[in-house]
Length: 190
Image (cartoon, rainbow, N blue to C red):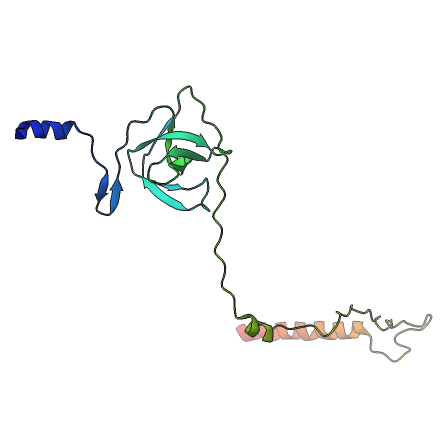
């Protein structure tokens, strides 16, 4: 076989999948049916929500076949060969959905992953610091306030007869002091 024939054969063969720079490249065919186009980098998850694990990405310009959608339509399930299940979920506002006359079915989301157990203290150590109340909680009690004493004037008597100081006299005295102060300040200005 000549070199020219070998070169023609290699160029006609499909690209092989293999690791390039730590990333597994896979050949993809043009999807048929409903598809998504990726205008920018999009993360792919195992289910429709941020609580699901991140499993891959699609880069700008890639297309994928749309299989289904979430009940609210916020997430789209696509075929994704990069995982064991062969499907992934993309956030719908970040992709362009191309749907012909086919309808995309609603897919029941997979269960979320089980959260990891939270480490706790040694039970013996924690028991030392557990406070136990000393009996039942007492209810609050009501203590009435002392009676209010209201001062009253005796009818038919006048404040002047009781030997008190008339408030009008205090007001007149303060007025006179104020007028005197005003006169002094006017004389000091000139």
